[in-house]
Image 1 (tube, one colour):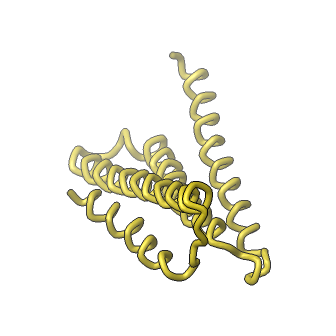
Image 2 (tube, helix red, strand yellow):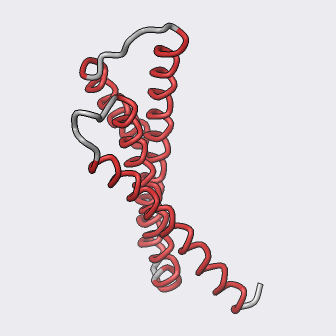
Length: 141
């Protein structure tokens, strides 16, 4: 791959990360601009899934910027530290996304298969702890 093709790929990769961040921002803005009385459990779950995906996209964009600008000039120890920090955030955000998707699946199963009503306040704090602390613990391991 020549330098011209590599530069075009760089621009496409960064543009995809920026588009992803903008899309997530639109979803979050729509959530915050809805009437608080109309917000429901599904919207809260979607918001937290979007936050996990936002961390993923921001980590990706920051790593691209650092890689394209500074990485060739970094010393070996700095490269290892950068890769470790980037790896932690990417692993955490992926695990958090999977956990939130699991919670969404549980809610869908409970509502549509078991035909039960979900109390918004009762499982939400437990789910928030599960979907944030468990990925942090697993990412540190």
